[in-house]
Length: 316
Image (cartoon, rainbow, N blue to C red; front, side, top):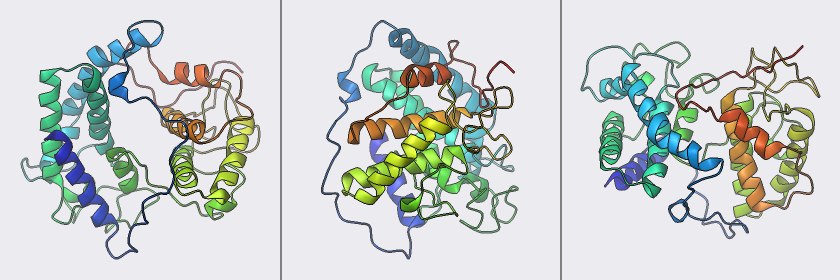
């Protein structure tokens, strides 16, 4: 039932987002030549990843569940569903933390059945579904009080796409992240990674899907160029991305300050999603030394309860 309800939520949201637009494209004619093993068929019991996965299952997921309750993130959905009174609480992108923990818990349940966690996920999904508006729109910062939305949300739906995080939130609700257009060039003509590092890496991952599933050679050429640009000119030795803190963006060529580095964790996660898709679609002629290990160590916390958004590097 949990999966059915969540699929209905996603379909309704996509219909609401795309109302009045062109019909969806046809079924893709191709697929990734390198396929991942289904997660339910994998058991990792030792080595580096075994303890990390166990910490995620037993410490991080319960911790995030509690924090979502304590910080009002769950309450925002209840308010949107008119099951609790009050104003929206927190940042306009806080909805994503509900979606992220549902995703993490679901992956965990695939290999480690847990009746209590399963019930928690069912309850969260029911709350999310109740917060949807009749046409499928789902964004608690607006739905809680559409006449008085928080700063950055905009006076109406989709009005402030550069700050509202409406699509960002949706991208965490369903696996295929929405590709954002950047203002300077059509995506197929880009040769440099510019702008917001998180949105860029999500877009690059979406472009990789298009290039692979629909055989788009223009996107494939662009992605090869962008991959070289990011890994050769804009990536820290740690794997971090985005050196400009004020705009959370990629900087100029080879401008990678240490102590002033922003290198948001979200950008590195977006990068991993992109690199994963690239690895499944293309054979790399060059992979920067230390890239896989550097990114893993950069993102993962050992304690399981500490989350860092900005990760400056030590040194001058």
